[in-house]
Image (cartoon, rainbow, N blue to C red; front, side, top):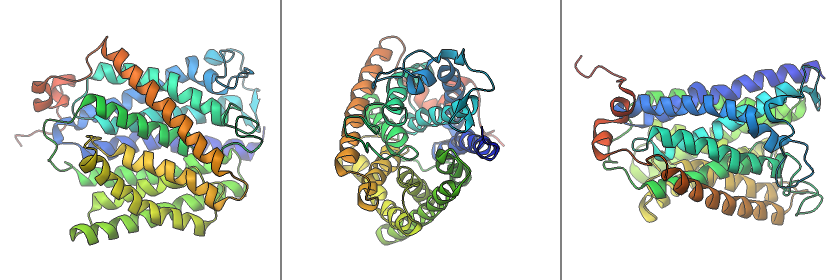
Length: 394
């Protein structure tokens, strides 16, 4: 064990959990209507709790177990039964590596919440999220970070795919799953109301930005110059994407909005995630600047052209951002391979579509996918949870 590495990853673990609780909850909660804010908080918070238990029970073993299989890690580490405080993973206590990776397993299905808020059944959210994490996310983690089929020595040769902190593992899987679920769910009855609290959205985005230092910088798994470089690239990309998104909004619509600018921040963060440990600050500036434009047009494509009500633009921001950043590694990193980057995106994309669609249909046979029209009109805060965020009479 290395004391400096251990100290840094303890901090990084806390930062990544901060991204979901309260960062993502506030970001998504501010974007929905007032009658659905508590339901959005509840979905995010419950997913964090459920994924923690499932990661302990099965997820960590599937992702990082020591099976010789290139497809999954096996069941040798279920419930961490053979671990002690002295067990190590690299220079870290393995308990800490488990906890750090657990925060990734929390935020990935939590990102998908943005696609289906305001109209989905709460039981369906929990059942689908749990199964999806175990059957889609955890295997992909093994393929890329656990020595599986897409990593070095796998189907793309000795180099394998480059994905430093989750452009494919987190953002592509969450973005594509979000699009599939939104397609199966259908649009909201009323989708023309603006976000109820742009202030919440900004606070949530700011917490995500800070937390992302742990997300990307912590993925170095060491307290060294590589972690510092990843942190720096992360910040520059976020700043650049915020500015280009706001500028494009001003050009297209005559005004730059707060919600738009901070959405650009998230687009820049998602886009730099796969390459943050490999690119220079100038290359991060380019990636972020392009992401602010690309992801904004992706929002228009999803909503206006293919007409899928991905409510809070999960695919356009996270999916497109993660895919774009993964491909940019082949542009900026000479050691990488176009075949490995694009091929891995294709394999994981098809796998995610198939698994997500099957799970939506299977879970829908057991619990309702969508709430009733009356519940949607009243709002999920009252109809699902019996609470209100605000006293509408005062």
